Structure formats: structure tokens, C-alpha cells
Length: 299
Ligand SMILES: NC(=O)c1ccc[n+]([C@@H]2O[C@H](COP(=O)([O-])OP(=O)(O)OC[C@H]3O[C@@H](n4cnc5c(N)ncnc54)[C@H](OP(=O)(O)O)[C@@H]3O)[C@@H](O)[C@H]2O)c1
Image (cartoon, rainbow, N blue to C red; front, side, top):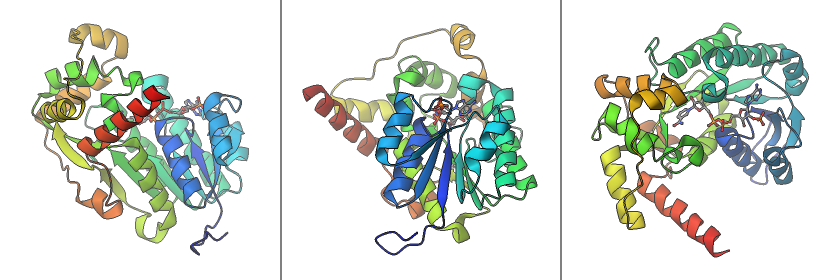
């Protein structure tokens, strides 16, 4: 299949987690780039799935707990983007699901896997939801699948997405444990989608790469300042004792934020900007998000 600009698209790309934050962004950018997309979901009749179908994706039912449902869903595809969410499934299930996806992709002979991972690119950090991704990525490699690993650090949506409870987490417990002035590497979810689509468009360059993705480096203190300048008021923080936060959310995030307080690791924007020169900074992203919100409000 050829795009209007003459680029060759060798087949469809399946997206595991297509109705989620990352998967939906990847699906949109792949469709926009002329790819056929097979969006996998446990609920093809759900709102998210139907929205993807309206955009032009083929929606298929598959549950990553059930390799028997993954095999037909991946049959015949050229590429695969896959992401799991340990916050909703738990760490053991994340690994189990990742391994099932890897096996089904190997059985289907997928030509390029782009894995939506996380972390700082080190093994055995003690941060559960980073270490699981090292295990899953290793499984793809063991099975001989051509793999690109994408490791966004912190999504800018942590500041606004209600599902992340920003008032409690990013504006309160996170800086208390990590330090207000510790640098954080940020990326907008939509830019993750754009970058993933670029990986599929140029496999010769990206297969075998493990990429930390950072578009802007800003401490929480700096983000508060930018927020104030863009919106005219401070972001709302809701104080919560760490033990109470851990009781509701678990210890993965608190372990991560304590790790980030003390450990050293690379956090450069250079690579991300080479891939996507227009990747949004925190300020640009907040200005756009604010613009979208006031437009929604006026509707
Ligand atoms: N928050 C951050 O700043 C950050 C930064 C870097 C990386 N990460 C990583 O991002 C990942 C989460 O990505 P996300 O935010 O895009 O997740 P998300 O919005 O929760 O989406 C996950 C999707 O996975 C699907 N899913 C769940 N269980 C499934 C199963 N058993 N079989 C098949 N599909 C299943 C769900 O779709 P259906 O319900 O339609 O099946 C859901 O839409 C985590 O691994 C996290 O570590 C987060």
C-alpha cells in the first residue's frame, strides 16, 4: 500500500492497548500516516473502540490474558505496538500479558514490534513497573522479534488527567518524595504516538533501539511556575500522607519517586528532538491543553 506522498506501507499495524492513552495516540498517528490499523480491545462495543473505528481502525477483540484470542488478532499484521498497564492489572499480570503478546507476535511472524515501556534504561532498579518492562522487552528479544523500545519518562498528562489524580500525586506526594527541584523528563502522550508512528515508517533505522523519550526537562517547581503563568493561578494540590496514598495506590509510585530523588541517570532531549523536532515543551503543551479546555467550555 502506498500513501499519497508515495511512502510504502507494507501491511497493517496491530495496537494492543488501543483504547488507552498511548494506544489511542499511536492509532491516530498511524492512521494519519496512511497505515491500516488493527485496534485490539477487550470490548469492541465500548466508546473508545467505536471512536477508533470511526477514525478508520479495524477493531478486534483480544484479551492479553488469553493467548488464544491474541493469535487470530495478530495474524497477518506487519507491525505491533503494545503497552500494558500495571497500575490497573498489577505487576505480575503486566509481565504475563506482555509475554503472551510476545509469543503471539512471534507465532504470527510480526516484522516490527514497538513496545511502549518506561523507566530509565537500567536493569533491576527496584521500581516494580520499570523492572517488569525489562523482563517483557527481554522476552521479545529471546523470541527473535525485531524490537524498538520506547521509554517515555513522565507524561505531561500527569499534570491534568483525572485518572492520575494530579492534585494528590504530581502536585503533592511526588514532589514531597522526589524533591520539588529535581529535574523530570516530560513528554506529551500525543507525541509518544507521533514518535511510535515514525518508528514503523523507518524500521531500518529504529529496530534494535531502546529510546528514552524526553521533550522537556523541568522540575515540579518549574512546572508550577509555568502553570501559574499560563493559567493565572497555581495548580491545586491536595495534601495526603504518604502511607494513606500507598494504601490506595500501592507502593510502586512512591518507590519510583524516592528512587528519582537520589539516583543519577541520563535525561537528554536530544534524541527525542531528532525524531520529532516539534515535540511539545511543558509550556506549549499547557497552552494547548488550556486552549482546548476553554474551547470545550464555550461549546
Ligand atoms: N504515567 C506516566 O507518566 C508514564 C510514563 C511512562 C510510561 N508509562 C507506562 O504507561 C503504561 C500505561 O499506558 P497507558 O496510560 O496508555 O494505559 P491505559 O490508558 O490504562 O490503557 C491501557 C489499555 O490496555 C488495555 N488493556 C487492559 N487490560 C488488558 C488486557 N487484559 N488485554 C488487552 N488489553 C488490555 C485497555 O483497553 P481495553 O479496556 O479496551 O481492553 C486499556 O485501554 C504503563 O505501563 C506505565 O508504566 C506511564
